[in-house]
Amino acid sequence: MNRLQRYLISNLSSLFFSIYLPLFTIASMIFLIKVSTYTAIIQLNFSEMGLLYLFTLPELFFYTLPVAFIVSTVLTLYRLSNDNELVVVFSLGLSPTHIAKIFSVPAFVLSLLLLIDFLIITPFINVTSANFLEKKKVEAKFNLAASEFGHNFGDWMLFINNSDDEKNVFKDVVLFNKAEKNEIFISAKKAEIINQNGITRLKLDDGKTYSYNDGTFKEMIFQTAYINNSITKKIKTYRSTLDYWTGEDRHDKKVRAFITNILLSLFPILSIWLILALGIVHARHQNRWIYLWLFVAVVAYYVLSVVLQQWIGFHAIWMVGISWVVLTYMLYYRLVGKRY
Image (cartoon, rainbow, N blue to C red; front, side):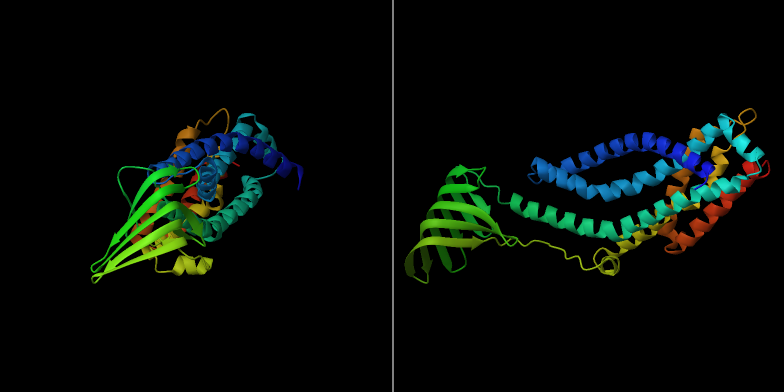
């Protein structure tokens, strides 16, 4: 690594973190608000909230890293231009394309990491997160408490006299189930909700069962009995990255996400000429409204990526990629290439 490369990367690193950390914090707050909405339908403690936030990190990194990289790289060159340091570099015989080669390395690495993020990491996280939420939704339907009113426990009507909500332990419980030709009445001194191998069930201790069927009345005394819930979980199985992206489950939505995320992943490496066009200026003669053009460029690329994939499908990948490189190179040549 030569001195110029070390100097540029050093300036980029310091500016990148000063931009990325506030951006990451703001994005985290937005994702935390999204996570907090789950508490309206399920009960979550602090550690479970933290786990859901960790599930959002791959998506959070995916959307914040490329924007922070483009902005920080452009501002790095813009600051060096205003300090006349790039003028010195060019006066030594180095061209802007040499700077493009230097920044293309971290841009390529970032694009590669973003591809790995959404292609490999995100599918596994999505399946794991969906299964966790499904489990909590099923458990939420069994948030029972002592009440003069009954609770629905699957096909059973459950009445509770005393409860310990923290331990999910209940005392003096009564259950009633009425089928078409069969009625079952159960009383127990103690009941407890347990989760075993992903199955939520009600454990009954020291009770009696009464059943009436076709004119026959039966009584049975038991020490321990179990009642499985009849609410099915929509548990998903993660097999492989290829199976996730080619599976029939929400196939159309996955295809749209695949195309859009490919383009967003390539944003850093496809924008090398844009970085030079906006960042390299002549301090005395050029004023480019750099923040406005940065905003327009980022929004334009993201809008093109989202909209065109809806119209032309997979063709959007090469059409947007090639068009973006050509347009940004033309902009670079007009603003920078002709001068240096």
